[in-house]
Length: 201
Image (tube, rainbow, N blue to C red; front, top):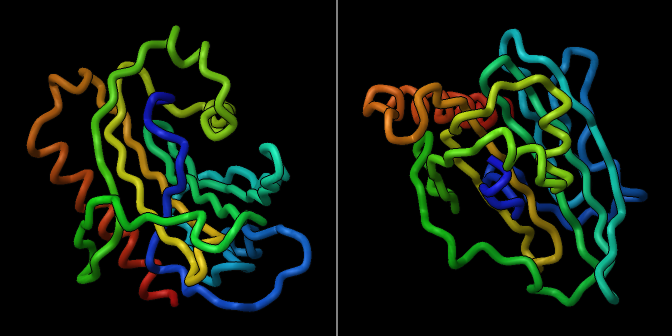
């Protein structure tokens, strides 16, 4: 799972704005457990029925002269989860882009996205220290021996902020055992989730 890519996962569901946002608490939950996205993007992500809340977490990593503001939060179940991450950079306009990613149609709209099944051992999981996956590991989600995953990406108009949505579900028998029925149900469930976000905005 940790091999999957820690790049942004997001949606064209986030309405890009030019509003200046003090601080960087870009993700929070309201009293009903709905995720509230603000700052470079504005959206409500409704809480899936029965989901556990994870986060939000906020950080300010830096790389050479680039400073980032990152917020993430998620919804978790025993064998699947969704993590939303918002990232803003002080680097030059156009630094963040998703134009080279494949296009996927979901809920009647086109999104930049990628999807894959990833085999993962417990040893690989334990040895990876990526912050995104460390975040998910605290939520007691079954990941081994494999996950089916989809990432959606969106950037704001000037390419200085990116939002991502990462959805993963455990594949009990590993990727080689994944059936067409499993994949179809996975895709359908994620499309319904995307539609719920569009309906709320």
